[in-house]
Length: 234
Image (tube, rainbow, N blue to C red; front, side, top):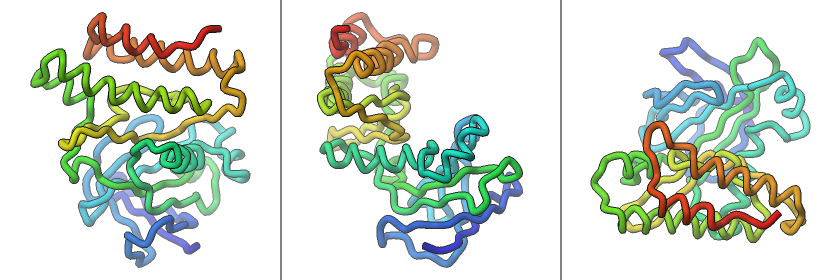
């Protein structure tokens, strides 16, 4: 555990965090500097780190409740890191998280609740499944093959009582070797997978997934049929 300053030069942000290293892959000198912005939107700011090999994701608070939840490790930051570990235990490929940081003094005067640093999947040759589908370079059989890999993972989650609430093709990467890897792993685990509550939450996430890209990338009837086949009886 140590103090780390994260710097985002283009946003003129420098914020202190209590840092926890989760692997030995990242040398540490007390400062993390982002080199290139990927996206800055409501939930988070995402950037490539200065070494060009990792992605820095800084989590924003969407309500005052999240500042309070930080104190007992229930904020979205902790949810995503814990979800990453849970999916790994289930045998699902995720972008490895090497470091996390918690806002030193959580509060509205500070921009971020915390951050984590994970593998840069794009640097490893992977492509967001949304972009892969949108490129038009796949025929229907190839699209179905990639989709089935995603659905296999969702089936494992369903059987383990896990809901991936923000499930869509922008949160899954396709590797040239044929495997898929998940990011933004804010999942919820229910210890009674047969409960009505779990079925309701899981089914909501699956229906949302089936319709999520309608405005940008409509899925075929067969693709939606395969997704909705995961629904649980209620």
